[in-house]
Image (cartoon, rainbow, N blue to C red):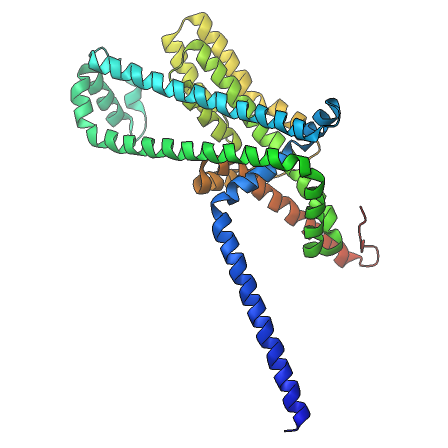
Length: 370
């Protein structure tokens, strides 16, 4: 072996060693960064989503107050915090009042269960057992509670766990709103960074896909999350007026169902029956009309709020919101729907662009300038 070949081999080994060391150090640095940032990944993603979703009203507000972006960001952040905090206070107060009422009635032995209607026994599979349990509770509530104590204990533990996760999710949502407020004044820099990142991944189609991603986020946020929040707030307002117990809890359930693209009438219809059994005819009829309008309002609100945004299948929204809720609580409910919708939209656009290039490479765009 000549001296030249030995020198070339030595130089190649040196370059390989340096490359491995550099990549190892970069991987270690990335691991440490991800480890330290991991508790904040969901709030950061949520903050980015919120910042993109409110970009249009933020720009309009900035112009309206004389071109002061930081002031506009503070105002929008305070509005978002009020929208989050006020319903949370109402939800907590409703749950506390309901628990206090039940506890007082149990202590005073005034809690009574009405006898079950005969048609309950005719229900398939569970009708007879439900009828017997209900009848026993109406005749001797204390004995029925003793019999159901193990099941009530499990249900209570589940409820406490759920409330704990809900509280943690609300804190994460609060943090996401604060992050969004901090990001709003840097919207132009963020958009430029997103275009550069997309260009490094998708080449010439990067800026186009980045713009499509922003449009998809705004569309889904307004058309899905915005409609869900409006429905939950209106339904909760109606329940508070007629005195439905735990109105905040039912409003939260309506919000979850609406984000998952499930009909909110699943929750509203049983409450309508409850109101008819406890309130006057006039109040019950008015609440039934109000509940029907709220439950069907998404048919009108979605086309108005989504505009010409991307069309995302209901299954994608359902899987994203449900998976996000299971993984990250109340914040994941919103972020999961948006992120999965974004991934679906970008994937479909990329596949359509690839199909066009394969059919006619000569006419396919090679570079997109902004």
